[in-house]
Amino acid sequence: MRHARVACFGSVHDAVEIDGRLKLTDGRVVKPADVVWLPPIQPETIFALGLNYADHANEISFKAPNEPLVFLKGPNALVGHNGQSRRPVDATHMHYECELAVVISETARNISYDDAYDYVAGYTIANDYVIRDYLENYYRPNLAAKNRDDLTPIGPYFVDKDDISYPMQLGLRTYVNGELKQEGSTRDMVFDIPYLIEYLSSFMTLNESDVILTGTPKGTVHVYEGDEVVTEIEGIGALKNTIVGDSVFAR
Image (cartoon, rainbow, N blue to C red; front, top):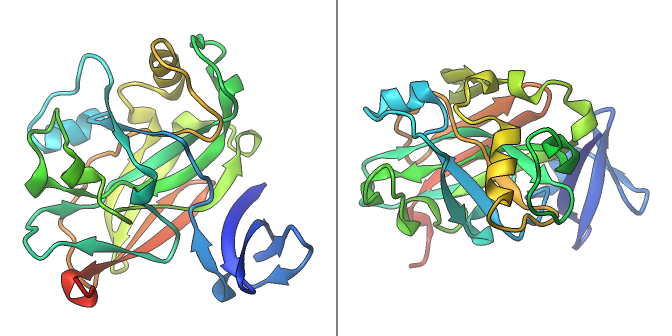
């Protein structure tokens, strides 16, 4: 089942997708075009993986790491489907990153590799934009590069684990203004989903609704004010976002 969080009729609603429409928990049915899309999950902690596809590491002249390169993101970075992300006026290297997002199902620690999928609730799509001008280096992405408000679109839907039979064999694509720019597969991750869950839970507790952003394949290019970016993952959907500049903000 595909789940969503949306705003309509003056309040926030959980919803499920049925035959191309959204059924709210109160029973009302609305058109997707008539709602404001919110992030489909509300995580405590967002884990993000750097250089978790070897081809992307090579693309930016780095080798894949020997152990997961993980950093944290704050919840204010998330924005829903059809949302806007800000490109600072002084930025010269803003790149999209289509990523499979893994949602944790329950609080746990010391999860084994073999049991890891038992702790997955489902999956969604994230576009983990990075403004590379602000990186210390590729192994130490700092807050200004990855944690700006509304910099990380996520959604539209959260899809139940049982509806995705082979999460390590999903196609990923990114379109900029309708043109295909990025294409890859989750099978090319350096560290797969069970490994990441085992690794993270070995030294810290994972909580229900925590999210793991699993990295992006090669094919990242610059985006600019006015660009429409669509990141899609097989079996999950397509996440649309627009780049806006500083001029639309009061400050």
